[in-house]
Figure 1 (cartoon, rainbow, N blue to C red):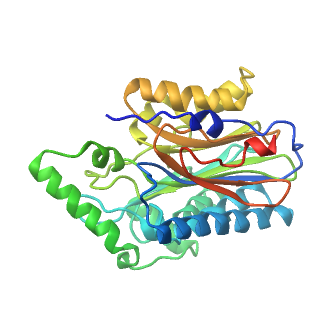
Figure 2 (figure 1 turned 180 degrees about the horizontal axis):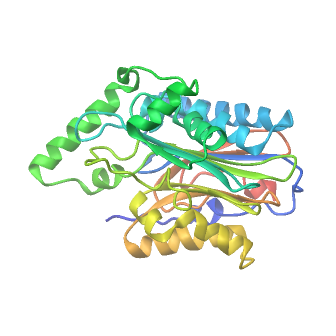
Figure 3 (figure 1 turned 120 degrees about the horizontal axis):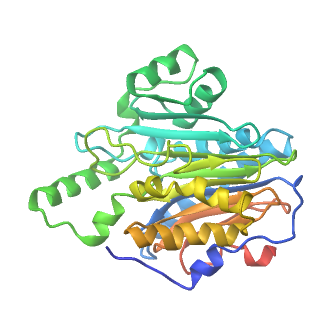
Length: 339
């Protein structure tokens, strides 16, 4: 498996030190890590940056109005789920059978309450259903038809499965099926199957943290495969000192319990956020054969955005109220200027 390590990773995992207090709202988002190269068309580049900016603006508006971190996380992720440029909601990839199966999770760090859903095919905004599971049920995770029945009972919007179809994702599946038949997958394409996902972490004015993640999973997935995104502690986790959302080859995030591991190092071992996130994402996961990225935030407003791929769609907004977005591995994401 091809791994990409660049000098930008040091920048991408830097923390914003000493520039916010626990009561200053901060929002960090990602739109997936993976094979993201500078040969992306100018139109696509512009559209992705606009969507990231819109998501930051929507989520930060919740924080500035005094709402909770979970509200900001939900609002930001809904924007990304509604945009076909990301592998979540409208832009979800196809399974081997030509369906869209969506997963999501959200967690409130102040209470350790969480909600997650997996394998749904008709829920327009999976993050809203995960939120409803957290808020309106005694459970943490619901799956498949049962999750959709719960959505209907609780007023979460359902759509015809055709809503999720985009020609770009359909053609990605056709290419993957052809490669399956030939049994000669291209290395970059094989790696790319495992990427996608959108996520957000937030710190609200009360000093509370939250995390959320939403995904269509991996292109050409089979047998009801579920990745790390809806698994609390693997792809999504928040407590009163740390919040993280991951993006990458999910099986490795599950095996390392990546999100929980990062947050335990921060809150229990007092490891700085940037170091904890970089150790797990850029060392432990690659040592097992996986790759990807993450966004993380601690109670003091420190941000980490480590990744070990060509790029990661990412952004943050803090005390100055200005959205900062970046795509490529060698691109300045603005964290250094905020120190």
